[in-house]
Image (cartoon, rainbow, N blue to C red; front, top):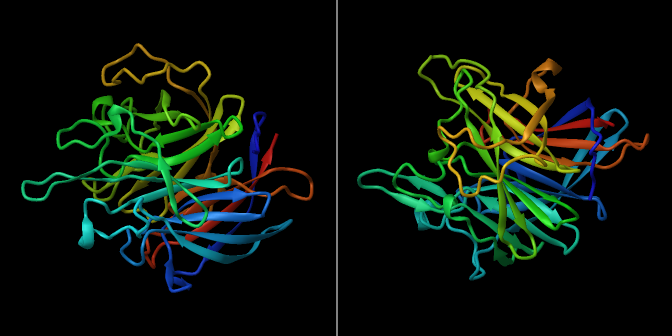
Amino acid sequence: MQTVPGLTGVHYLGEYNVSYNMNFRNTVVGGLSGIDYDALHNEYYLISDDRSDNNPARFYTAKIFFTPAGIDSMNFTGVQNMLQPNGSVYPNKKQDRLHTPDPEDIRYNAANGMLVWSSEGERIVRAKDTVLEDPSINLIATNGKYVGSFPLPSNMHMHATEQGPRQNGVFEGLSFADDYKTLFVSVEEPLYEDGPRAELTDNNAFIRILKFNTKTKKNTAQYAYKLEPVAHAPDPATGFKVNGVPDILSIGNNKLLVIERSFSTGRAACTIKVFITDYSQATDISNQTLKGNQNFIPVSKKLLMNMDDLGIYIDNIEGVCFGPLLPNGHKTLLFISDNNFSEIQKTQLMLFELIE
């Protein structure tokens, strides 16, 4: 697996946009929220966050073609449904709202040829309408067949009380590390007991990055990661705003790339920041809550890139992976945005050269 522990910078090479509502093998291509690269077969895996509304929950395979100037073209090569343990496709919320997935990320394990994907589950708490569906980390074969899952630590279960994960703020990021012996899983927003969501000023908003042993499937550690404030005030002031972590990527030597995505009502674009983090000195907070707690060390972080500095429109970036080597031998990063199946958003692929 690729590593770049000496990463010092990035160079933007270009973007490519997938057509809105493109049809591929009788499915609607959209909501692409995770991407990974199988270097041996030069093939990409892309997961859709379609909650089985347009078509049953699925992932795609694709070929992406590059030139020295950037991305030339993209060809989708296959589509597979992620299957439940009983072999059936996942239902939508009208069919079975207690078992409707919310797919977010996908990673390919080159050591065993299998895939892992994450679901955020659901948390709806109303007097006459309560749905509590736990997030999940699922193992599947490349044909979509269910293989197994990672047991959840106790603090990752959904509750009707303000405890555990928030709705739509759970398992967004996945990354293998240590030659596929480790799987890291990031939580998008703070757990209730860890404190508030990110605001316009620094308010000590911490998310968790979970470490799993891929052989035993046990959660062996949890680390705190401090979020930046929301980048822009919403318009109107009472409008929606968020900053969270949509994906992570191991670069070796106890380091992860962490993406922060900030969005505020009144702005079409997102603010995307990418940080180099180091967890080697971080406290294992598995048995701690963070609200009002100062007795822990979070992962260190250093800004690698703020995509606002590119001076171009940046959409809802949700996934990142390594790409192929360039003719000069340099490694690449490929980002993808989730268009939320909206005609006013883009499915945007963005390519960067890595500088070591």
